[in-house]
Length: 98
Image 1: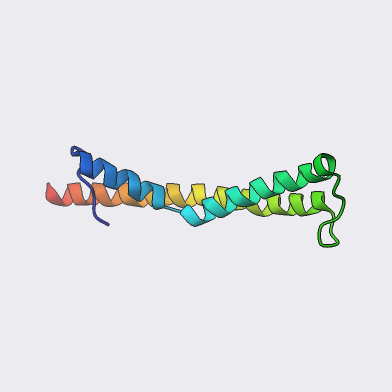
Image 2: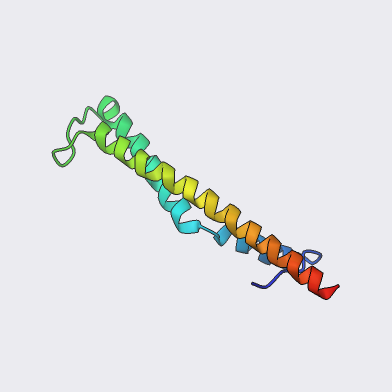
């Protein structure tokens, strides 16, 4: 892991990009599933749809939400763990340098 020089504009930009890319897939999937779940929960009352592929839309919505919420929690945990490891590595480098 390269530690970026935060005193320069390019270093700050690279650092922000790196932090945005940590755990991006679970976060993206979690947000999509939560959005789909809430839309499916609203479908029967808004559009008067009572069956999708032979299944009840609120049940599908609840399932999407139950799968999406842990993915968001996992992305937060992964990002926090990555940041802690990165900071520990930076402290080690600073200690070695003197």
